[in-house]
Image (tube, rainbow, N blue to C red; front, side):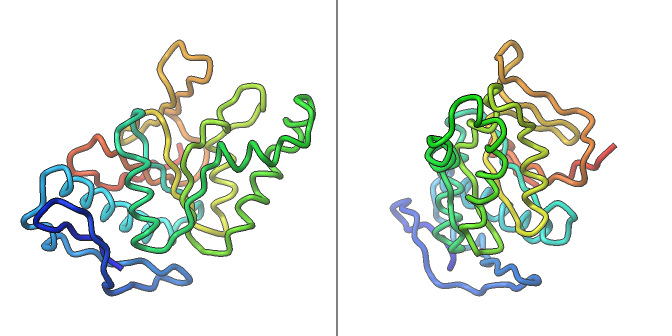
Amino acid sequence: MCCGVSQHGILLFQHYPVAQVGSTRVAVYDGRLLARSQPGSQKMLNLITSLQHAVLQAAQNYYRLVILAGAQGSGKTAALRQLSVAANYPLLNVNLELSRKLLDFSRAQRTQHVERQFRELLLGCPEPVVLLDNIEILFDTALEIHPLRLLQACSRNRTLVASWNGACTAESLTYAKPGHPEHLSLTHLKASDVILLSPETELSQPRKVTAS
């Protein structure tokens, strides 16, 4: 399927060619569909197109992880929802689904079970590409996990596209603002490649951050 915009600025979805990369099927978008679209709609389609390119690129990496980093309200959720509909990728609300799984454990037990419960959550999605939104629970300091490392480990067998409340540059990734108890600043990544995108960057080109 492909998303386009009507002359009234309404996002539409229609059938369009699909590319195959290994076991990953990726919808192909044509930017000419938006010749008469509103500026905001054009920016959104550019972002979705960049996400699709990032999914293709990630399929070749050791860690098949794409992070969409941006401030709250920057359009991350809207982009993931539209990508989910256009390409038929499952979209998980991690806060909601993982919280449900952890209800059966005491606060002390959750640190021991959270990573396994997160992996089981992903196992419930057989598709090769999974979209993750609302991942803030992974940054809860009480759970004592490293969010990026967990995402990377889980992306070995499938491509994960995760929203991230923060910012990225060509060589760094941050979560929350300095002074926030969950603030995380990653300037020297110790894992393999991570593909970074930002809805706040005008051209939203995938950027590869290589392990130091």
